[in-house]
Length: 487
Length: 100
Image 1 (spheres, chains in turn brown, yellow):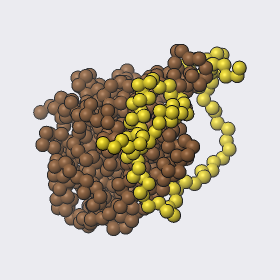
Image 2 (image 1 turned 60 degrees about the horizontal axis):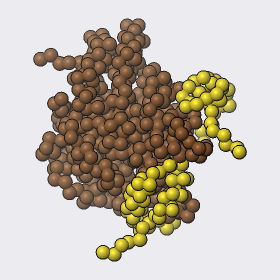
Image 3 (image 1 turned 30 degrees about the horizontal axis):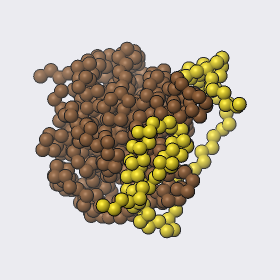
Image 4 (image 1 turned 45 degrees about the horizontal axis):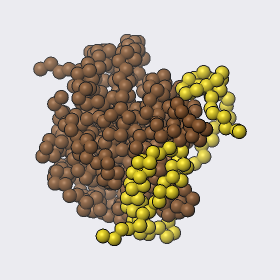
């Protein structure tokens, strides 16, 4: 049977390119045609740039012909709409940046250009990455490719939906409280949030700087290894970038996992009420056990404070980071105002959507005089407790297994007017950001309604290779990651 | 039913909106007051966390001071730096009069 190029996994596309069996222009055209065919139903992109993509593909083909190519030359990718690409439109899902054309490339974008990758377009997201459903985007919600009534999760819903719908072989997302892992789980694809400091944040529009991290979304562990090899590197332009050498992530893909120990935090599993998620977690344990992995129950006693502490720290940092949107240097400016301060207030009122305003209000309140100790300082101390919980846990295990979300994908509109219910979606992912650990989302199975249910693996700092190794072993034994939605 | 005390008053909503430089319509103020009240009540659990003698954590990695040579490198060209400005005059950003 004839297989379209867009259906092929990234690893195979890279082989076809290297062996000159398919050109980058052919592959890129295949994805652009796929986008054209399904985008109306998925709405994964804010901006698709076919002409620029073909130009990049032609350049990649010239490099391949000249023998000046690397392992990723010619491979298309979708980029979350919060990473600066020089001269393109990058909106961060917001009206305030609706016409913003960055004057420079983010470091990850520079690395992609140097590798000869082809940027298909900018993928949709919750406004300023604030949300768990991609519903808060100024450009409207992205649909879950498995069921258009459902959200794709967020905030990187566009990148995850694009990969699930085969509109792109791989994508880059960002994760502040679960924003790569939740949509990867909801869309039935693989995604990883690397350790804080593993990937440069230079050129990533800041939401909460001590939590934000860029990472890949793809179909399987192999895709993760390909992209991690490109983006994990020290960058002098980001002072929190770790000055270290990263391993070759491809070399761990076929390494055996027998003898490893996986920890099961009782606080996570006691919260499981959903029968679909419960079933997937049980089946996952059986698979890992059959591979010679043992389990240990453990406790992360301060986990219950995670959401409350996160929703102090992240909005506090956001309220400060978003102060730069003042209608002066770039972005929207209100047409009518009476004074400088009034210009700021009206510009921001018009430019930001309800969730962004809510978080600015919350963060400003938490940092305001008289409340700092009770909220921000307290939350920062809880962050230490949660981090120590993980450190203690990793004395007895190699990785931690838990769900990504308490439920399978929920309906568009279901939680949008209930902030606390929306925030609770991230109960299993937020602690990982608080501690700066690497966390990975892997397709784990399906709900009774045929919706994807993901599982999460967490490793100690800078041990993302162990996650790739475990996921690769899991995907040799399972086929959830090979299933794709009918569109 | 006993009505629990609100965690945030309308005056505080006004004050915080001003600090955050957000012009809010009356209905937005009412909505945010109610939602922030709910959220802050949820945050009450923070007080129960045992944090005596615990040091606060600003970020997940150990920060160091990265040193580098003090080399002169080209800056963003003026035209590119101004290209996204909503209003400009000559080589400057144009803003409303600040000093009376």
